[in-house]
Length: 369
Image (tube, rainbow, N blue to C red; front, side, top):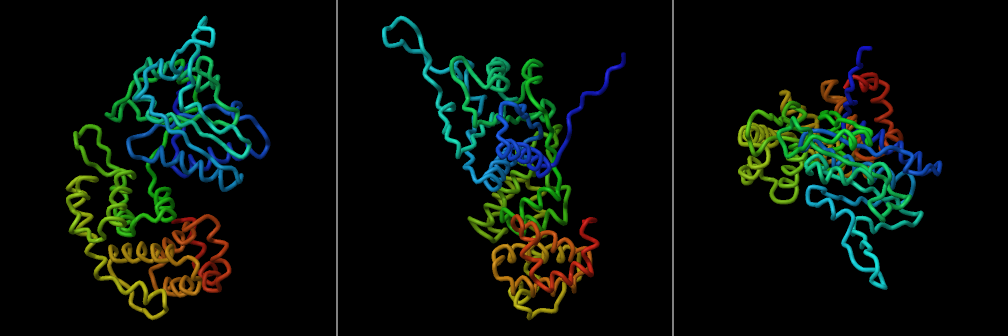
């Protein structure tokens, strides 16, 4: 009998979030015990967004169920096998040894709470420690300690081929998981970036250079390289330290590498040539950039401004009117990003006549971008 290939599904971050949150939200609403749903293992290269996906799942659970979702992040790499069982001590009459419960098992068991035990970087833990996780992932116990019924078990780790600290997962442990591989996907990342307030310079540059979102070349020993995680670090530098990309160039290079940082630095100079974003949103601008890089920069700047003024629908309406002057593909990218500003923001846009008119004239292109 021939053997079938045993590949695992490969999903974008937002598709992963959608599948997992849907499963757990359904379980909450139907009263299905979490232990009936298999523990999930997310595989993927460093910085692709595995940990971020877990936190997004928690937010979705809170939003859809009204329960508080608490994520307990456990790095098994820092544990010895015995640590998971706890510290031995004598019982009251000193005849037996009992084990003090580790802090990670001290969870709120109230019905208004959903707990997520997140075993991050599990593949970086030695196999002896991974073996200690057998009971957690399947039976939800370690020794005398039991996870509460309101606890979900999720794990994540790098693949052995990623040239990171990673040990091959024992078959017995692997067979206790539902496995998914998380891959980089620009559209998925852009939707998250818009909702999360990532710097428009970062969003605009990566809209222009999709391939620079992640370049984890395992054959090259570079310490700094672009990933969704390192671009988030660059965004934090620009949003919270200094918006002048020139003055913090060395720090940007320290996050994504000097080659990519040099291109990013050159591209950021395009922002200085853009028409006034405030004038666009106040209906006082008819100037449209001509070059592709400037159009990408303009769209990302408009999305950032719209996110900051999302409740001022008159401004949003003016910007949608302006978008009709843009080339069709850039106009569609702009509107698609507007709809990603927050969940259900499209419903608010549908109250605007300019948006309804835009949908009638250009809405057919939405599925193609």
